[in-house]
Image (tube, rainbow, N blue to C red; front, side, top):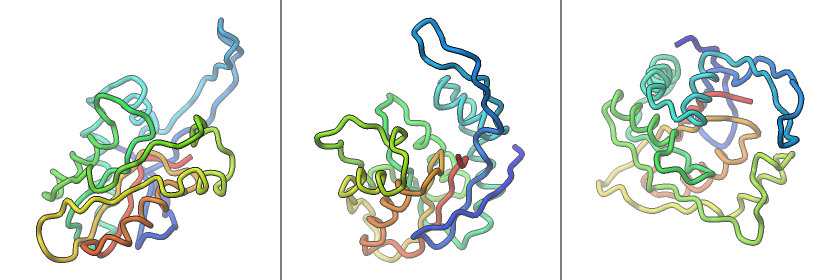
Amino acid sequence: MKANLKKIEGNWDAGYALDKHSIRSTFTGNNEYGHPTFETERTEVGEAVYQLKYQSDWLQVEPLADAVVEHIVPKFGAIGLVIPVPASRTRVRQPVNEVAEAVAKKVEVHSFERIVTKLPAVGTNVSLKDLSTKEEKISALEDRFTITDVITENGLWSVLVVDDLFDTGATMEAVCKGLRNYAKIDKIYVATLTWK
């Protein structure tokens, strides 16, 4: 899968996104419910993420994991485990968890989806994607991520945190902030499939 890497900065040791999500999006009018519709051109990675997340095309998991392993993993030091960023929406199968698990298998380490847990928002139904600034997102994410000690072995582990989309970085920073307080974590590397 073709990639156009972008270095992403934050409170982690190193991080990259595979490619931009969308190349262009053109308004095509409103649908029968009055909602705007768009014709969107995506990168190869962006289209794969779209098909996985919104069309439940699980055949996209392996090519996306292969792209992470081929293009991003070699930029980092040794990885001891993989952690998916918790999803913002409940699904029977979580796309990011599936990609993280596939990446972990390919680099022959474990994926731990229970280390980081996202607590439900209290007193608001506003989705993060409906907030416009990083500050609003940081405020909405305050104290929403908890860390559970599920690593049974002793030692320090360098982790690869995997997510599907990098926008302001607020979610990734909140996750990494929590991981910095986990005594068994050493280096934190991040990989996102796309950036906005």
